[in-house]
Structures are given as C-alpha cells and as structure tokens.
Image (cartoon, rainbow, N blue to C red; front, side):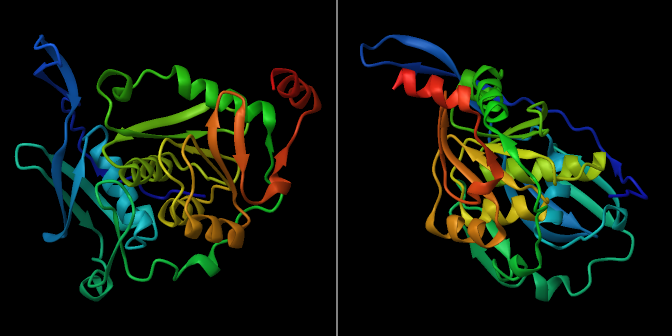
Length: 283
C-alpha cells in the first residue's frame, strides 16, 4: 500500500463525557458521567452527504473511514482536506476532482443492524465477490488471549460512563495499534479504517476487535480493510456468519477470559497444546 498524498486535516478535540445529576432507588443524589453524543454533518465539495451521530473522539478519521468503507472514495490522494468545526457540528470534505455520480451512488440506503442505525449506500453485498483475504494468515491461540486481556485492561470511556462501543486493531503478535470508542460500532470501525489509510497500514496481517456484534456490515467493512480476523466479546448474526464463510474470514465470538467460539475459517487458528491443557484443567 502506497500513499502518495496526505490530506490536510483539522485537529478537532471535544469533550467525550458530560456530568449529570442522578438519583438512585433510595432517593440519594450523585453525579455520574455519561457519553457525549452529537451530530456531525458531512459535506463533500459543499454537498450535504450524511449526518453521523458520534462521540466525536476522532472525527477526521471517522469521516475518511466512512468515505472509504462506503466505497465513495477509492484512494486517499483523491481527498484534499477534511475540516471539522464543532461550533456548527459539520465536517467539510474537499476532493480533487469530485465524486463521480455521487447523487446516484448515494440514492439507495440500506439501514443496518448497527446501534444508532448504521447505514450503507447501494447493494450491501455488491463487492463481496471482489474481496480477497490473504490465504496464509494465521492467529495463535496465545495471541488471541493477549488481545482479550489487553482489551480487558484498556482505559476507556466505557469504563467511566458506559453506553459506547469500542473497536481496536492489533498486529499479528497482539500489539495494540489503535483503540477507538463511539456511540456505534460502525463509527468506530470507520474511524480505524481512516487511521489505517492515513498511516498507510495494510490489514492482511492484522486482527480486529469489537465489543459489538459481528454483523454483515462489520464483516464486509473488515474485509474491505483487508483484515482476516474479527474478534468480539459478543456474538454474530446469520448473515455475518455467511459472509465470513464466503470470504474465509475467521470470526471469533464470545471472547472473554480464556473462552471463545470460532465460527468460520477454522484453519486460520493455531491451537497451542499447553493452553488447551490449561483450559481442560479449569473446566
């Protein structure tokens, strides 16, 4: 993967939580933190495209990843700038030559099962047959456990305030590369896609983790990013499973502690005898 041009980006920081006063079942008053949720309306070459409801932790990367995963922009060097202005809750994207047939390409939406009602443009399955994941990518059982433990100890908005989803990208040795939280997992995965684009990182030897369900939307986005492994502390859907099998992507669900369920591409996981023996002793 070669990046020829890096777009000009704003650096828009904003508070991620808000303190609110609550009363419990005994009538006691206290103050708790809740996640922020705000609209971000995306304009492409001054044309309104979409409004994303987001936590706002990395809005520039979110916009880039959204354009990438919606297949509206193929190459990073097509984008000249992304400027986010929270005073008007807007992101202005400027492209070099415009997006061809943007009105027709964005006319049809599919509302997905993503929390916060994620949506994708056009046929959800249109590009599945064109996506190819590296056949030789493998994941060691010990690396899987390292990833789950890293997520367990990660400092997060969720631990402070709840009500958000987290997504993370790991190397094949289990090193944490990115961790993004948002009100919807589809936003978090898009933000990671944007960061990968900006940092010129390929997905063929990476592992993706999400706290949310492994739906068809998540599987397709992971495949578009070239990632052969999707992990979740939650489960999967029938369509997510079907697409993963078609792509030979390894789905690992219910990942918690030393427990996991491998649902597809079972040849990709390298079981380690000493870890299996340890699990049997704990059973």
